[in-house]
Image 1: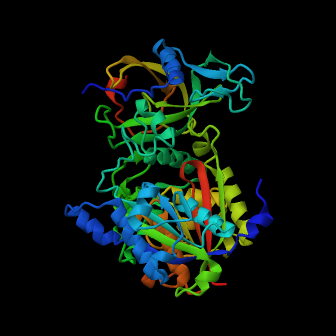
Image 2: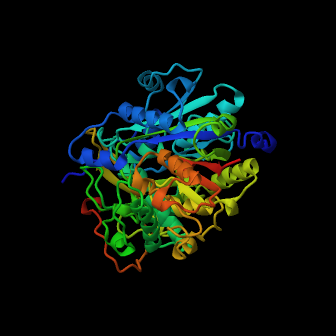
Image 3: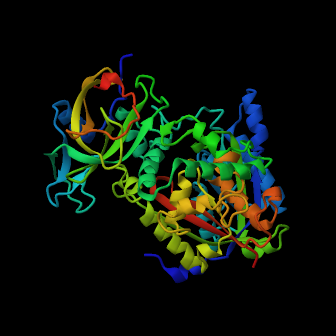
Length: 393
Length: 151
């Protein structure tokens, strides 16, 4: 059982001192012209940029968390790092583990590094060699019926969510349009052309009810973050952004039969993760000025907003129809363009955008100078997880 | 086009399920200690930890709880469009299958349909599919072109 007082002691102890990303848009252009990228090269570029951003040296790094598909040892080898702490984790768990390791005194300055050349490597997310089947049985169990792609599983989730809540295809289109409007303001976003809802609805169906524009990009890129103690980060050159809270809850019972996904819509996991982040940080959805949502598929957005308590179950359509999630709205979603518009970095690019917004360095798409909290929400395969970033203090 | 389905996972417990289906029987593993069904089959009961189980027949009836229609082809030997549904069986477990002979909708009552099929490893067998529980008349005016070879 969670121990709220022990979790509270972790709030604000760690901070993001540096961020780095590759040139998604330029690289995607080069990719179209035939250039092939190496995942470790991308990771290395992002890592050097994060060091520069933080104003520190490689020799300051004493911990490394490598994000799959990167292999841990090879990442450390390519980056030239000998370490006193190392781990492998996806975006949200990398941040959680970095905070834990710093609090426990295992390391003081941890590099979180991700690189993926999925475009160059032609990674398949559906079909006979569906990616992730070794970790999630549901991705391959139903191949005899032609069901393997992750998009199809989210399409099934969408079909039920729409009937139960009245969320429509046009609402999904408006979610995509909002995120694409943000992407249009981000020079590093790959899909910068705005999308009208009418054009969305004209787009081809892939796995009905989802259409082409409900699916995220597949591109090459790298992301890195430097996480250190808040005390040390205060002495570095960037405005302070701390990790105020996090939460995670996994639903594994009956996962392969799809019950938690289709019937429960992961809500019990969302509720627990939301309760954890609230207990740890002392803040709730009302204190959050913007959210970053894992958007491999657009339908993640209404499901996460309802699950994590940003509206009542079934009320996401109201947020969409009143424009609250789009530029200028009360709760902007994926202000960098997310994975639908900026870059498919499996949740890593969302962390960078959260930090950039809280530093007030998001350029044309800066939400508000008064922004104090940005929350990240994800629920990949029933693993609900959330991070709360806080400006200053 | 000859339809070839991806071969089921090669796992001893899975094979038991498919061997029953090849005999036109829908049976699921059920814990003999606490009567909990397990799908996909598993070596132990997640409720009581008991490893003993028997393969109990299901009524073959249920209703659709979620659906998708594949318009994009992910398998060259499976012609699109085809509908995939999740069916809540009357006994409780959720099963995935293709819906044959109707447009999918949430709540649609369905019954099992065993379809002879070929798998892409060269073997033949049956697969458990779903069709509307007769009599059923769809209110949908939209005609969906179900793969003829499924019927």
